[in-house]
Image (cartoon, rainbow, N blue to C red; front, side):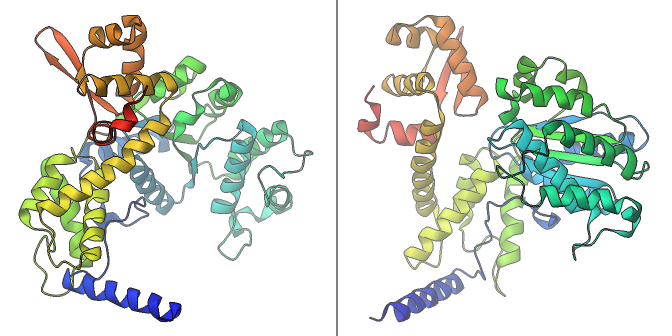
Length: 409
């Protein structure tokens, strides 16, 4: 067959299968919510706390906050909700990811985003409110337009910091806030970022700045280890718990409703038993729910099915578990990887003492590593009598106990 015709035919077959599943498209996207609140479920208490922080900041009582939770719990989506909510109120807002970059590069991104997202129109002209500062704004923009490793050396970090302070203190309307949203802020918890945290310690003290950092449950503890004073500048911690059972059902229901063709029933193409299984096994973690539903639909398309039952969901969970399990192993340090593989050798659930004897290492060392892995959400712990047992996550069980070759130490 002609390759072009083959591709076209494959595309048509997927369209036909989607119609059999009573879906216009696969509604389970992993991308964070971007202003589309119809897919946002729950989080009433967290939203209320954010609203109170914002309201207090607008009246001079600024309390920067950390939004913390396990991977996939919805921190990025929460930052997006804050972004659009505050943007509508006319505040300056910037949303950044603290990826593996130097402090100088991060400050360059911060300054660039403040300029482009708040001082310029969509057409690339300076907003009328800031025309009196146009020459200096344009000068900054020209230096930053191709920001990154190629930024000219004559724009040193000290100048960047001065320009940030100028924009905040001189250009910004004093009745408005500059709101800085930073995702994956755990990247700052390393010695190479000490100078950046020290800058934040003074920068966050500037009037009219409100910052939200998003990261793991130990974010503030880890940042404080690098720069103890930062704790005083970020006094609020908003914990993101798992969704409740009803919220998990609601998350699935809302997305399916948006993608259903006319005449589809509530959870089609999933059977009720399949939905129950997804909710039960995904532990209220939005990303797990979304990924499991998406993978189930992909399997149904490949098999040309019109229903997704428990068997398909189990296949999807197993497939995702192996994939995610490998990602987790790649993310762990050698010492952490050694411990989870030893846990698998011991059946997947074990105590500190058992691991210490098996690996011939001190209980203190084992306990420290287990605590770190637990905080990352890769293992669980439970008390049985006087003992605390650590248990591998489902994803690590799938990859470590499902393939004996992975257990080679």
